Image 1: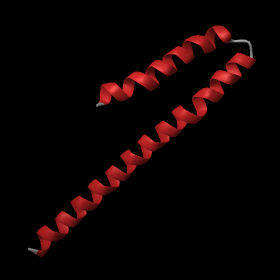
Image 2: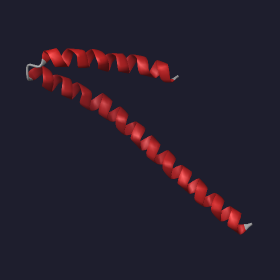
Image 3: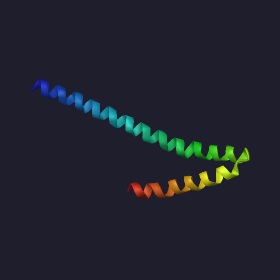
Image 4: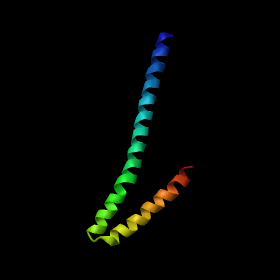
Length: 72
């Protein structure tokens, strides 16, 4: 019985660690998307690459508004 409890605790610990990594990765992706995408677009615009920044802006806006609806 103690062996089963030990195995259960180990499995639970591993699952909680995996959940923590998934949550941390999700938060990291959200921060990168929210914080760094506008910075990249502004730098491209300042550098004179408006032809690159425009489509990236459209793709970013579509991703921001359509992906949350697709995931639900």
